[in-house]
Amino acid sequence: WRPAIFCILIYLLMGIGYFLSAAPQLRLLESIICRQYYKETEPTWSEAGIPEHLCKTGPVQAALAQLLGWQSFFDNIPGLLLALPYGILADNYGRRKIMTLSFVGQLAGLSWVLIVCWLGLPIKAMWLSSLFFVFGGGSNVASSVSMMVIADSTPEIKRSQIFMYFDAALIAAEIISPPIGSLLMKESLWIPLLLNVACGFISILLSWYMPETNCFAVRGQKNGYTELSSDEEPSNPPLKHSNNGGITSLLHNITDSVRVIFTQTSILLLVVSFLVSTFARDSMAFLLQYISNRYSWPIAKTSYLLSFRAAAQLLQFTFILPWVDRTMRKRFEGRPRTKDLYLARSSMVAITVGFAIMGVAPVVGLSMLGIAIYTTGTGYGTFARSLVSALIDPTKLGALYSTIALMDTLGSLLAGPTMSGAFRWGVHLGGAWLGMPYLISAALCGAMTLVIFLVR
Image (cartoon, rainbow, N blue to C red; front, side):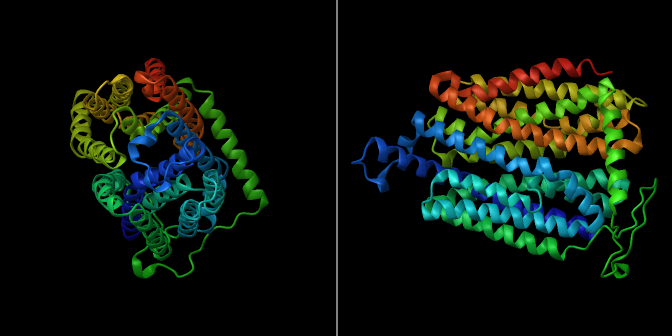
C-alpha cells in the first residue's frame, strides 16, 4: 500500500502546485504579450502601467492563444514518441527511476518557462521547454507509470477504489488551489509560480524515496493478493533486462495485438473515441482565457471557475457516478457490457450538450451551466475503458491500454494548435464566435455520439 499512498500524495502535491500557478502564469504571459503589443503600437505608453482590461484586445488574445496552442503541441510530442520506450524501461529498470526522471524533466521545463519570462527573452523561446520532456516523456508517461505503481501494489479487488482516490486527490487540489493562487497573485504573480517549482522539487524527492514496486509479486485474486511485505523489500530488486531478441519479440507481440484491436469494429470505434474525446476535452485549456475575454472578467476572478468545475467533478465522482453505476447494475444484472454501453452513450451526450451551451452562452451563468452539464459526462473514459476491456482477449489488454494512451496523446497533440487557431479565429470574428473552440468540440462529440450508438 505504501507506493500507492506515495503516488496519491505526489499527485496531490503536484496538482496543488499546478492549479496554484495556472491563472498567475496565464496572466504573466498575457502581460508580456500585452506590453510588447503596446510597445509596438503605442510607443509612448508606459510599459509598467497597462491595465489588465486593455490586454483583452483581439491581437493580444490571438497571440496568447497561439503561444499556448503550440506549447501544448510541442509538450505532447515527447509523450507520443517515447511512451512505449519508457514503458519498457519501467518494466526492465523499475517504476521509481522512470517516474523520478519524468518529474525532473517536467520541473526543468517549468523552470525554463519562468527563466524566459524573468529574463525578458523572446516569449516564444518558452516552446523550448518541451525539449526537457525528452527526459522522462512528460506528464503522460509519469501518469502512466503512476498507474503501473498502483496496479503493482494494490489487490485487484480494491484497485478501482484506489484509482478513485488518485482522481479525488487531483480534484481536491483543483478545488483548493485556484482561490489561493488568485489571492497570492494580487501580491505578486511570482509567489504562486515559485510555489509550483517548490512543489515539483518535493515531488521529485518523494518519488525517489518511494518503494520500488517492480519487485512486488502482486497477483489479482478473487479474495486477495500477495505482495512482498515492507521488510522483505530488497534493496536491489531483481529487475528484468531485455536483450535484442526480447525487444524484437515484444515489438512483434505489440504489432500483433494492435492488429487485433484495429480489425474489430466495436473495439476500433471505442479506441478512436478516446482520440476525439481528448481532442475536445483539451479545449477546456482555453476556459480561463475564454471566460476572461468574452465576459470581461479579470483572470484572477475567472480562476474561481476552476474550483467550481472541480467541485462539480468531485460531486460527480464521489456521489453521482457511484449511485448511477449501482442503479444500472441492478437494472442490467448479468449484463455489465450493456450497462457500460448505456453509460458511455449518456456521458458522450452530456459532453456534447455541455460544449454546445458553453459555445453559445451569452452570459457567464449559462456558461457555468454548460460546464456543469459537461462535467456530468466526464465519466465517459471510465465506462468506455470498462466496455472495451470486456470486448477484447484479456491477453491483449496491455496493448489495448497502450493504444488508448497513444490516442489520448495524439488527441492532445492535435488539439493544441487546432483549438488555438479556432480561438484566434473566434477573437477575429468577435461576439458569439469567441466560443468557436467549444462549438467545434460540440460538433466532434456529437458525431462521436452517433458513432458510439453503432457499437454493439
